[in-house]
Image (cartoon, each protein chain N blue to C red):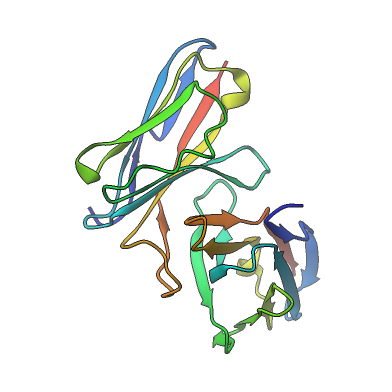
Length: 110
Length: 117
């Protein structure tokens, strides 16, 4: 089993749709969680950190469920510019490493 | 510099040759990571440096791969006797401290795109 698992998609949605991605992690000692966005042939860039209480940044909402060991990202009112691959990232202090999921590809259509 | 700087940005090399990839992290960042990403695939952890601690080399795929970090700043990833399966983008990232649940995160360079022919 991979340490961090995501549904690779692709998710094809119309503009204005709400879309949700989930990510599960296997290491219960994981401490920090992030969502990164990666555009085609570009480096990953931080989208948002994920906090236990959940957090929101504009149209983006991230949630963490430690008991079930999953993280979610909700995108409301999808824009064409949201088309990208979204990477779930987990940091575990017992390994000291950041582990990336395979990424979920989102394609927003006009 | 303002961000993580990597060089070369693109490298085409012949099978069997050695290559060196360089990473200059954000000034003051103590942690440095190397990842590899093959086309259409996720990020594969290679190696992690934190301050003066011994590096975590657990992700290096074979003994043809090595990395060093001189003076706690610039890092060089060396691939000896390159093979076609080494073709990928090699991404370097740095962070200001060891991640410890503080919410601190890492910042990536633009990558070195390696093609072995």
